Length: 235
Ligand SMILES: C[S@@+](CC[C@H](N)C(=O)[O-])C[C@H]1O[C@@H](n2cnc3c(N)ncnc32)[C@H](O)[C@@H]1O
Image (cartoon, rainbow, N blue to C red; front, side):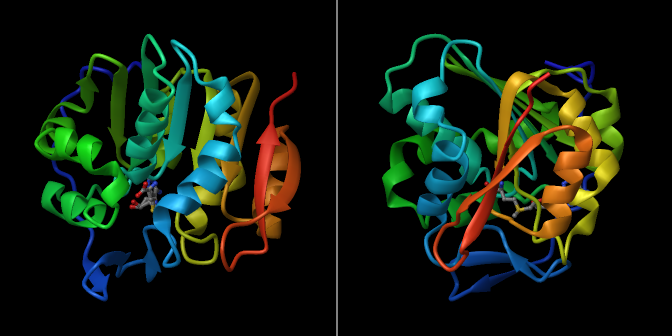
């Protein structure tokens, strides 16, 4: 947990959303969907869970950090994987978000994913508490949401994450979340042998990750995307 642990979260700006086919949220400001139009859950599994070899690596105290909390789908999918594995102990998940969704919009977006039904119902009444307190402590997880522009808020954070999910909107539409200076901070907040993954294989992303110090690899992407990026910190 970080220095911002106990700070109450107020004054947030909700995103303006349009719903594609009434189901998939698109942030008007960025003109980009929150998850793959092909199959959001399968994309999370391919890019973030398998991209970081999480089914094999999850263990008590494992720390994940994320840029872009959005609908909470990545968090729910990871906890779902944790429980599927009957993993003992606690998962630590810290996410950065500047435009938190309204709890009812998160629930609506999650409705898309039938497989997550038990877990999403468990959290549907907890999102408001997460927004108000910035933290949720469960029997098998600690979830922290750090509100504000990640480029600023990450500077006050002193975690060493075992794994990062880089999940901003596309670099062309949301370049702030892929800037060199921010990715340097991500590197600082990564444990030795920590990994990261992102659905993006844009040259600027791979270049900025390399400049930060990560060993970067381009691998097979999900759905219509030919490639994605994984990286590791070896120091
Ligand atoms: C593709 S969505 C994330 C999807 C999310 N991981 C999920 O599971 O639904 C990108 C997110 O990044 C957030 N974002 C964009 N710019 C940001 C910034 N400068 N700091 C923090 N979050 C930002 C957006 O508000 C949005 O929620």
